[in-house]
Image 1 (cartoon, one colour):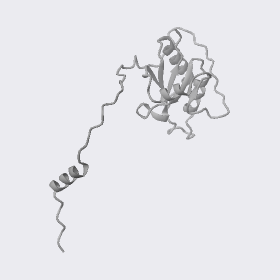
Image 2 (spheres, helix red, strand yellow; image 1 turned 30 degrees about the horizontal axis):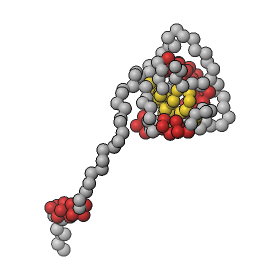
Image 3 (cartoon, one colour; image 1 turned 45 degrees about the vertical axis):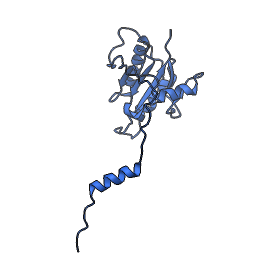
Image 4 (cartoon, one colour; image 1 turned 90 degrees about the vertical axis):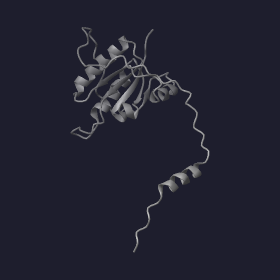
Amino acid sequence: MSKPEPPNQQDDASLFRATLGNVTPLPEPNRILNLTPPRHAYLPGGGGGVVIPDTLSDSFLDSPPDEYTANGIARQSLRRLARGYWPVQARMDMHGLHSDAARRTLQIFLHKALEQRSRCVLVIHGKGLNSKSGEAILKLRTRHWLMQHTSVLAYCDAPPQLGGSGAAIILLKVNP
């Protein structure tokens, strides 16, 4: 038996070009990309001497939704949030925190973000893959706490490049 001859790469390239014919490149997208970097990365620490009341409850019966809009907020705002319309201005990572520490740190983080007039923030809570119970406890509790916070207008899963379902991107009410 004789081995089949390897295909000629010249023939493949010319066949490919002949198949495509005249190709017109796509027009440049008519979008302006927001290239402003985030204001800062949040480092958990003290509340800066300000007493922040602990008003968030841990108890809930039903699992909180993966996306939320406060009363009176248009659904379009949630779609814009999910598509990255607002740049993330601050971020916090809660990996390794216990429930009480996570709740307290979240309250301090949101307080500081509101002081700095941040409109959109990111909270990384994790997917719960390393949880002993196999549940994403911090994910559920974080979303429950966000629904209770008076300055949270909306939240949803972060885009994949920012953590996907292991993070929440949050739209905050910025008072003038």
